[in-house]
Image (cartoon, rainbow, N blue to C red; front, side, top):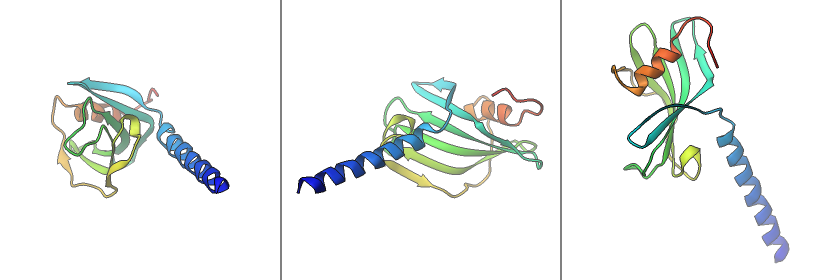
Length: 137
């Protein structure tokens, strides 16, 4: 019986380690904060396409749980740099900050295009993502 418990414990430790590695593999850097929420981006994921679209991952850590009981949401954002539009290519919400805990939101399909509003975090991120020329990472 104890060998089964040890085997299960080792398996649980392996799964936890693998999940931690996935969450920690992103290179999140501070981007913005507002009302207790912090927005981070992974500049290593920035891709600028020849069709003048750009994609980048962003992560929002919430100061308190949202209506969906998540404390962090990662979003893969695509910007149409010439038409001031954006859409989410994927959205994942977690019960803990920094993509930890159970995944409570799992939307791996693109959303509809929407306008980027001035004065928002998304507008500031669009300015970074759509910048042409040498990028500072």
